[in-house]
Image (cartoon, rainbow, N blue to C red; front, side, top):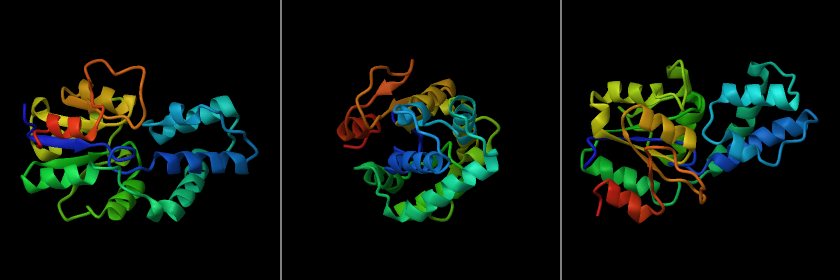
Length: 212
């Protein structure tokens, strides 16, 4: 099946930003005298800001109000965002899909501030670019709402669309939205979300998308 539209996750899928997100989290915690857990990355990858905050508040003793915490994290992120690079091969795939006229959208659990900064770094912040951020929906991934909103924005039946994701939460959301979810993690995984298709290489990704 050739996709009629493709919806991309941002962090870790289009742009190699997950390490920066983790550094920002660790820096804020350390500045408050809180030792970050060793498995912090695994616990927060693909998860929206509010659940991450609630975990840190309930389990790590974070005392800051949410708005103060997220401000500190985003200040650190924006100070370093210009150093980010696209994930190997991702932008080439994006541009090839664009060239053949396939509608695309970015669907992220990050706030619009972060998504738009990343788009500028990637050089794909063109007029008419469709994106769904955590600010645009009531429920973030793994809820299907962000991807269903992307389908509404593009006017294409979810069953005819593909999702490209690097996280369990994102792939789960894509499957729940009734889309073909291509799970393209950066590291080897022990578990693939039910209904998702594991993609182990850039060549496999291109093959699933009909790009040869």
